[in-house]
Structure formats: C-alpha cells, structure tokens
Length: 85
Image: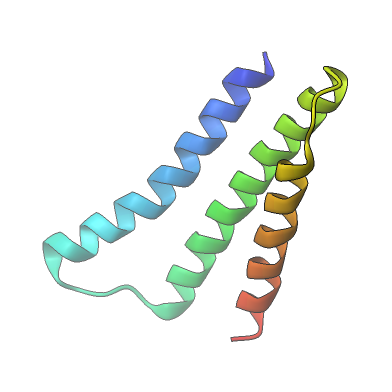
C-alpha cells in the first residue's frame, strides 16, 4: 500500500520540477524567483516524505536504512539553506 503512495509522491515531485522547466524552455518566459523557490521546496519536501516512508518500511523489515537517513539529512540541509538565500 505504501509503495503506491511513494510512487505517487515521487511522480508529483518529478512533475513539479519538469513541467515548469519545460514551460520556460518552450515559451522562453522565465518564472518569478519566489515561484521557483516554492516549487522546488515542495518537490524536496515530497521526496523527503518518500524517503521517510522508505525508512519506516526498511526499519520494519530490519534492513539497513543509513543511506535513507543520510538522504533525509542532506535534503533537510538543502531546504534550510534555501530559505536563507
């Protein structure tokens, strides 16, 4: 069941990044900086949710999940540093 949620969240994050990029490339009209920041932040949060779901699944199956924790820490740092720019 959680695998469907993960797939939907990853797909949503991908579309949040790809659709605005393709619109800019096709129309040659850039988006506002604030809009770009919000879209990328939402995409990062969606990927973090997916990684959290994966972490709980691996923990339940007693598998190693250190790479997922590293990815969550890295994405958190990127998200926090993005707010200060």
